[in-house]
Image (cartoon, rainbow, N blue to C red):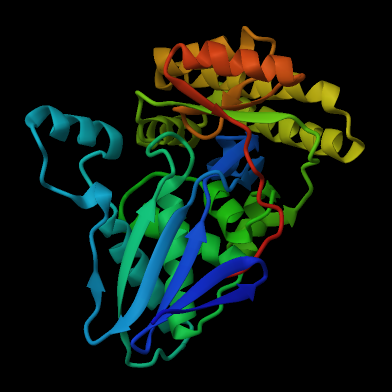
Amino acid sequence: MYVIRIVLLSSIYFPLFRHDGIMIITTVAYPRAALIGNPSDGYHGKTIAFVFSNYRARVRLYETPELEILPSRRDYCRFASLDAMCEDIGIYGYYGGIRLLKAAGKKFNEYCRNRKIKLPKRNFTIVYDSDIPNRLGLAGSSAIITASVRAICRFYRVSIPPEEMANLVLATERDELGIPAGLQDRVAQAFNVPVYMDFDAEHMRRHGYGRYTPMEIPDDLRLFVAYRTDLAEGSEVLHSRLRDDFEAGKPEVIAAMKEWAELTEKLRRALEKRDFNVIPELLNRNFDLRCEVCSEAVSAKNRRMVELARSTGASAKFTGSGGAIIGTYRDEEMFRMLVRRLGEHGIEVIKPRIVRSGGRS
């Protein structure tokens, strides 16, 4: 017999399933959409981002005699044909999700050791699944890691502040797995609400993290998210090239970082004043500026996706580093036009359900 109990922790739900005395902890994390300012988060810029619950990464964990990581769909190595294998590689890449869970566990253990947190001698089995469109600039890998750390924290009864959680997840990807990335994805997922982020260099040097301010994104701001169903790209190429140019002090890149921060401030004020009319221009400029300084990292398919959205009268920019876009639309007629026109090119369009209630690990 199964007994189901729901525990509420600052609006992040951890269902606890009991079967034969075994407690199964379930945690989730959501995809991230960068509303403005990206990709300046890795370069002491400013951004606004949120997570949305249309998709999710889920982790389940339960106590066992030995520590075991179970494979998920993207870890399978048996295919119907060579074509099926190639299709799988196109969606998930060459590496599955088990490495994410291993790296998350390692960084969590280091976090506890560095803070003299003594963990009880207990082991667990952990498994993940995710329906977040993969490698499309929606922070799907970060969501898996965030959900994993949340589950492990719950298991060992360790509390990690969201600022430190974001750093831990970033270190998991960047230091353990060698994935170039900025902080904003992990901040939005750790706070679980829309967040204004200021990655001021001096503040980060002193505190180890930026200035993060939860904020409101009004319900009546008409946002859409769209992503290609035939394209999967990592962010490594963009961030590697941008990092080289930034550290070399390339004038146009330095100027772009300053402008991205200014666009973020303008959009923040517009949201506070509910001046939605200026927002489309700010979003469009965010993408156009990216094309000016990172043109070689913007693929023809990605550029075409933005152009198709804008051809309906909507605004459009990347949600991350490519593969998915975010923008505003005027009314339901324009949204239907977006769905129809982008759908003709294999592009899915959704209205993001913004997560607004927050929660800690």
